[in-house]
Image (tube, rainbow, N blue to C red; front, side):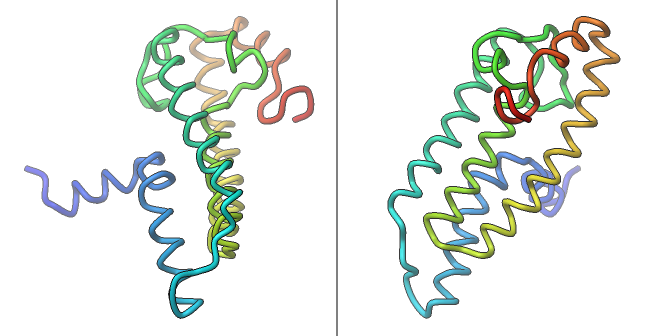
Length: 158
């Protein structure tokens, strides 16, 4: 039988739950406390919030439909997806998280959101290295060939 704390911990361990549900009110509350009321908002940062969320959600839906597997690497894909967004970069869903966090930092001019972004950029990079090892062992030369042709984070650059 799971306790309420186990359920909460499992929910918090979900990266999308943290990024898209927990972090926005956390950053807003932090900035409201720091400013002694409603913090100043840069509306143009919402472009990055929307872009990051939609990138994560839409590409994730497409990847699961065409590649199989679960939303995370714990239930790995059955096939490598190499077209659509995956034609240009190997980790568009993770990048969606980072774009969203950049939107939080911009929207609320928040040092906390910037710290979350920087921490998670490193965390996602380490996660990608682990994911790549799993995918190489699962798909072998097919994945290595894909990896040699498509950049990890920024199309044609990085």
